[in-house]
Length: 478
Image (cartoon, rainbow, N blue to C red; front, side, top):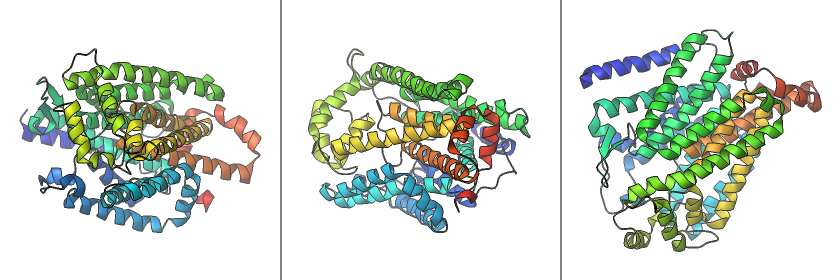
């Protein structure tokens, strides 16, 4: 098929997906397009790359692209303007997300000892943009419906276009590896790992939607929604195979397996079973990533597969930590040219800008204090997701999946970073869980005793809970 004709076919297919998944029963804010546009760019290529404008100069790494900076600034101002009108909801959510506030406060404080304080502060401000976009989603009048639409709008565009690029635009959608000359598929992104991330994150959302639709036999227009989400899921899994990213594939299997297992009545009725299930899945995924992921890294290094490439990287960068307690400062470790000189001597011809381990990446930039805060954040996220699951099993299983996959993904990739899809969806999961818990708290205090409600909710019919969640709004907190 000629590329021109393929463009028409794919454009028609994307339009058909949006049409099939339309839902006139919900009314989300037009402001939701701000985080959609933000994540379209983060999940593909920078705006300057799409426009074919390459930043020039000697300080590109420090200064970045003015086009990208302008784009993010415009989105930030637009989102901030919306949030000003949602002040009561913002205050309620920020009060409920104390671990996230502590982490970002320490990141800001670390700018003081960074060797590049100006650049570190700019990056911290850009990282705040992640939180601002998340707040747009969770402070919508219907926050769960807003998340549904966010996932669909991202998936219906990024995933089909990635297939189009890989198949019909090889100069954009794939390249050949420098080490072994094999074909590497990148789709609309600039890296196969990023393609893997967007595929597994959006595919998990499609699994959640598909399972809820399949269970709810009485939902209006159920078949067309199933067709749209089923198609999206098939494309997502196909791209996971094409991306050849072991970490993303394992993360998807882990998250999807968790959502399937937590739909069992035994798990829903027994809260302790959730912890056992999550522990077993986390240990299994961690072992696969730690033992299997190393072979992929070794191949990337062009070494014998018995030598773990990521272990070589970790062994090289750990002694370079500027300060084991507080690190080099927020996003500052890789700005130091001496780091790259020393790494080039230890691991020649392998340019690096991350440690291929999220926890180690935090250690290098923020020290043990930063790692401790990340562990605190993950622990709090898991605790809140489990509570949300006990009250709303269908939606809570998705939040648990995002939290668990973020924790395991960072074993072999650096995902606790600004503008990272896994990081954004981790924070989004925490915020959405707090919305559920706040709604339950308000409902309990106003209508019934907490003990009666806690006994009734875990056994609630899954499809009924999913349908009721769609119509959640903020009226109870006003």
